[in-house]
Image (cartoon, rainbow, N blue to C red):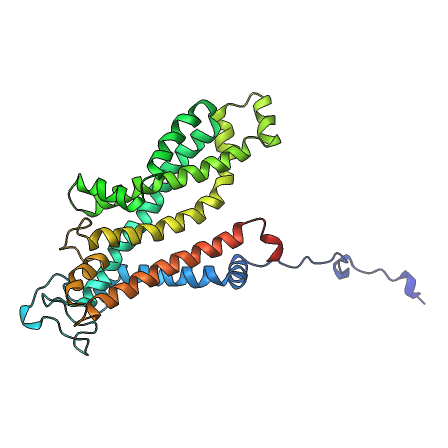
Length: 304
């Protein structure tokens, strides 16, 4: 009779005793958790995406030609036929407001990107190259002594009105903000031990800047870019409102409000609707910037 101890267990029947490691959260789960922890980013980013989609899909949103003039239908109040009413030339305000989102968002995003790139370059050079710091920052201080809107108006007075010139004028006015911010970050980082160690090992300045300084500027730069985007949209609306921005034939929120100011007391809807869209867009960008600041600021990370 065979004893139970002599019965051999097949190797295939042996169950591994190693614990199975649980799978980590997916990228989608981490992104949703990030949005739940930072509702400002979720709300501001969602509203900004909605405005961008409105501008991109403008021809599909039951709009008509925003430049079509119809004197017989001037200053109509909002109705089922004209959702936002018409202006003094009979143009559909709803279509002009929807198409105007393209101009404001294009100017805002373009100025944010261009001023960030140029200001980042100037700030890194001034913050890390000691002999150039004094010269560059005196020029930046002189530019910052002029309000951005006045500097943009002066630059637009030298050129003709177009979207490209508006972007260039506002970008020049916003570069000093970025340059001063990046310079401050570079000044604080160049005294860190790891930067001094890299210098002691013979690393050249370009390598130190791109490897150690530049990555640490992305967090404050991303927050600053959102505020520049919001400021650029407001400045563009001001320039268009006073007739120094994009041509009147181009539908923009500033142009619509400028054309309706003469009839503000009797037809307030001409200014009301573009003002609402501009306010919502700027609010969305500012909320996104506040949320990014809270999530990227290491001093606030302990409280999250």
